[in-house]
Image (cartoon, rainbow, N blue to C red):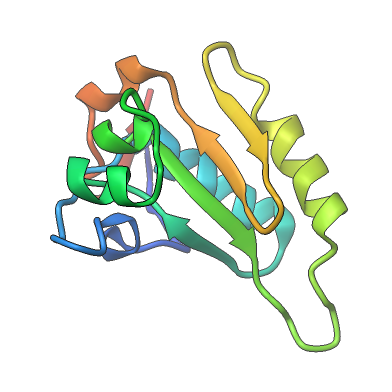
Length: 131
């Protein structure tokens, strides 16, 4: 058994901005932490868990995985001299997101990543135990 501690994200980064509702898929957070490690620079969460009201306000789908904590919209942040290379970051994210049932969508200013709906049953609470 291996315990993996999420290094690059905090739970509040995934909370709904209008009401604070939280609860995000452990698999999604693990995947994002590994993406951040592979990228070697900061990655911001634009949107994580959303309540129904906030999801409607931003034009999200009625079946959005954001509603169950299985989706995040992310972007690489400016690192001073090393400006985020959007295409390189998107290519890395798409390679890491080729697992069955995962979503990868590239938008103008962010990338949407979603874990399978079944992953909503195990929400991130702290260190992740890998078997």
